[in-house]
Length: 291
Ligand SMILES: NC(=O)c1ccc[n+]([C@@H]2O[C@H](COP(=O)([O-])OP(=O)(O)OC[C@H]3O[C@@H](n4cnc5c(N)ncnc54)[C@H](OP(=O)(O)O)[C@@H]3O)[C@@H](O)[C@H]2O)c1
Image 1: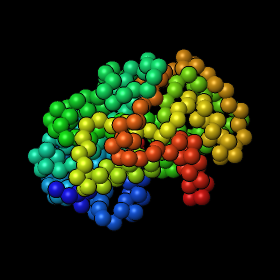
Image 2 (image 1 turned 180 degrees about the vertical axis):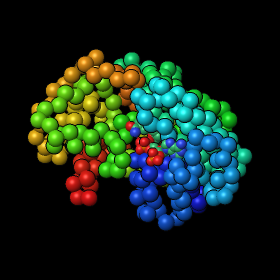
Image 3 (image 1 turned 60 degrees about the vertical axis):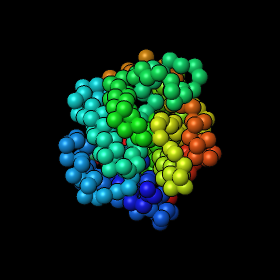
C-alpha cells in the first residue's frame, strides 16, 4: 500500500520539529504531527484509539524518554515510553498493515569497541536509558518484523536542547570550559536524519523493501572536545577550552568511550551520501545565528 498519510509523534522534540520543517518539501505526503498532549506514550493502552482516529499509512515515532541521567532512577516511566509504547506501536502497525519507523541509540552498545558498530553488533547497553531502547528494539522487532529501527547518536538541531546550543550559551557566559575529550562518536544533525527518514517513505513507495535496523549519523567522527572546538570556531566565540577525561566529569548514567555507528547499510539502501558533521554543524549554527 502506498504511503500518503504519516503520523509523527514527539512533535516538539528535535527530530519531530525537523521533520515538520522538512515535510514542507514533500507535498506528496500528508503529515500529521502530534505532541505529548495529543498522544502520550506513557499510556500505551490509549495509543490504538489515537492511531485509529488518524488512520495513517505510516507512523514515525520520534517521541522518547531522552533524559539519560534521570532514566537511571525514573526507570519505570523510561521503560514504559521507550520499550512498552514502542512495542504497542509496532503491534498496532502490524495489525493495521502500516509502516512503523522508530529510533534508537548508540547507547545500546557497550562503548568498548575500537571500530564502528554494525547494525548486527551484539547489544550490551551502557546505561539504563540504553537498556530501555534496546528492549524497545527487541520487543518491536519480534512483534512486527517489518519495524524500521534507526539508531542514531549525538543529535543536534537549532531547535530543542542539545550540546551545540548548550556550548554556544556557556561559551558566551564563561571565559573557560572543561570538555570531555576521551569519548568518541558521530554527531547527527536532526535535519539530515529527518530527510533520510522521509527518503525511507519515498523508497517504500517505489516498491523497495526497507525493514529492520539501520544506523544514521553524520559522516566523520570526533570527541565532545573536538565537537566543542568546532562549535567555537564556526560560531566565532571566545572561550578557553580544555580537554578532560571522563572520570573528571562523573554523571549518574555511564557514557560510552566509543560510540561510532557504521552507516553503510542506510547509505546503500537509500542510495544517499551522508553529509559530514562539520558541514551539518555549520548549517545549524547559521540557522541559530539567523533565527
Ligand atoms: N538526542 C540525542 O542525542 C539522541 C541520541 C541517540 C538517539 N536519540 C533518539 O532519537 C529520537 C529523537 O530524539 P530527539 O533528540 O528528537 O529527542 P528530544 O528532543 O528529547 O524529543 C523527545 C520528544 O519526546 C517527547 N516525549 C517525552 N515523553 C513523552 C510521552 N510520554 N509521550 C509523548 N511524547 C513524549 C518530548 O515531549 P516534550 O517536548 O513535551 O518534552 C519531546 O518532544 C529518540 O528516539 C531518541 O531516543 C536521540
